[in-house]
Length: 361
Image 1 (cartoon, rainbow, N blue to C red):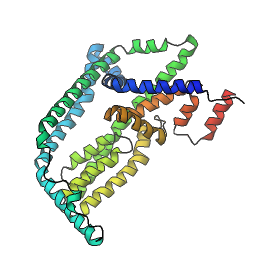
Image 2 (image 1 turned 90 degrees about the vertical axis):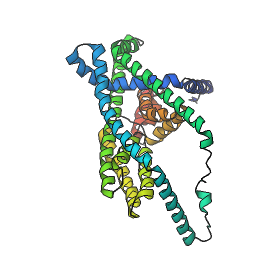
Image 3 (image 1 turned 30 degrees about the horizontal axis):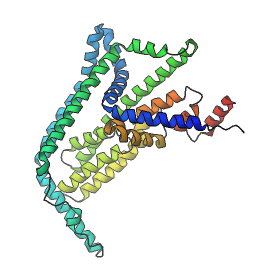
Image 4 (image 1 turned 30 degrees about the vertical axis):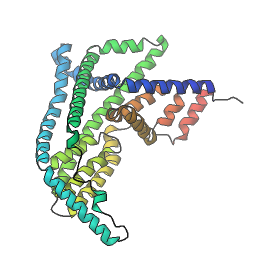
């Protein structure tokens, strides 16, 4: 009987995976800006191509492309900063109201369940905080984080510029690494990867805008203060697959719990975001992003957990596009084609595996 499991190949695969994982961790500061730049350059390519048809100068069309994308982001950031200042000014009263609300909730729990005997001191943190003692460490850590973010962002912009400037050379380099008869297939694969990335980034951006508008309208109707800030924040957090919308709903819920005049408002916020999450997951995202990101939920969540563990927030943001690209590449080789089928959203389609088995035989 033919044994499909070769222990030597499995050992080599495990060693390679461990080695790549270790290199990805120690090379995080190098890899993250580069990968983001590759994705951004692919997404910005149609915009740059359109601007280049008018400007005719490549080194000028690329900065103009950056401006077209950055100006709306900067406008939203300015509105955000104004809202953040207002929220920061009201933080002491919010903290006091939130503490009173928790204490009242604990008293109600003790009234309903006397045997629980929950004490506010065991649930709420004490006022004797050690934060002031370590304030210098917090400030220095914040400065280091900000400096690292600025450097990474600068590298990302620089890489994106050169990737767009030398795009044809990079594309030809990849194509000419393969045999002549395989080059048409490689071109099709690169085209599929490009369409997947453009569809994902553009679709996610449009979903964020739609959710921001819906969230802002809903919170305004409910009567929550700073509705625009919380609505746009929830829309931005939707970029985190599966958990983003829920997290975006919990923040205004906690805020409403401490500031709302009526007790029904926090409940209304929670119910509203539950409805929005269902609408987003079943109607908005499938119709806008489409089926380009052909990954089933198991591998999507697995990739988020793995890359999130290795690269933090950057890994979470990169997980879906990278796993989608991996599936496309796996689908081009006979030895990894079954893995591509296993990762796809049509994993329950038995016909795919039957067709693959027939082709192998």
